[in-house]
Length: 234
Image (cartoon, rainbow, N blue to C red):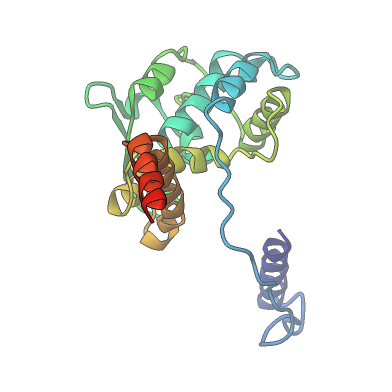
């Protein structure tokens, strides 16, 4: 968070100097204001029992009637099942969805390129259930801050700790990794230009596979018995 604020401050002073509100940029050059060392990327994803709790809490957030019920639940369902970023979902239009192929194409992504989003049955049904609006072509008529605040209220009502809106994207990526989607496949689903961004989910896949191996242990009794026999014979 501090580094983000430092970046904003640098941008302000650079722009002020360029517009001649300042004689020189006080933060220009090396050693003036250094960024702090940041920890490795945080990955918080919903546990399986937390997902239905969050979706149920979306129906009774209160404070803003337009953000409750169908719209908020649909937004969260789409986020969890596509890994799309907040503004990508807010920019969705009904005419951009191919209901037969179960895809939608978004333009002007964070990487500046268009990409195809695959919609599973849950995401598709959530979007299909949204009522058409006359005031906007967009499926979700919310402002970014509105939806962020509404999701956080739902998170609190669901009793979920340490979870933010962007973590819905981590949730999608984590469960994809745990199901075996890694490498280029996961990179494409998340729209990462650099594969290193997606590689942070690899350890989740490894942990999940180890837990899967531990859950199924074959011949344990026979092996244990064999070991005892050998001990006695020794």
